[in-house]
Image (tube, rainbow over all chains, first blue to last red; front, side, top):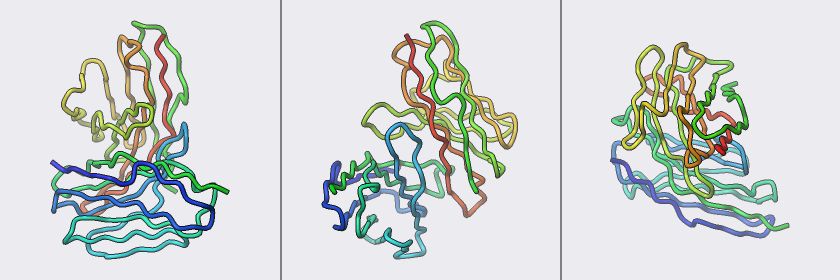
Length: 113
Length: 117
């Protein structure tokens, strides 16, 4: 089955700096890669996603890149703000796995003002 | 759009009792709903997948007789924790998808904090 590894587990940056979180996956059949932001005591919120036919996607300060050959994808947050502090999860979904998501272990991002 | 609600947001129950958690898709029809549990500082663990009108598919190690899932309509799925014990205390989260062949977006509910005393 699919295995997703996420790094780093914790990340602390100064406000205004960029943050990068990386994930690798194992199943070459995976073709959808969402990123979620989870604040304490709340459910995950989809912040950006990318499909396997695209190499990069950007939405304001957030971007995701995908390298299918290397089986890794990354989340980039620019001009970080204290409200970006949260736990971020990557996930991979394979067309052969009934739409089930395999999640990374999460990255706790702290943006210091 | 794509709003998923859960009720209740928090519940405290006594050991041995049953608790029902509802998951609703408010503005779309959810052909598939997923139920997860999440322990503190850990990732989401998939418990089961439910498709409207059919029996849920449980992940390995999840007791189907303890965690009863019903997906009777395209907007409602329920998870009932039967004979709850303190070790069932956790954060339960549902997600809903209107996945067609090429769409896999899942929209998560706000979660339900279950505490069994």
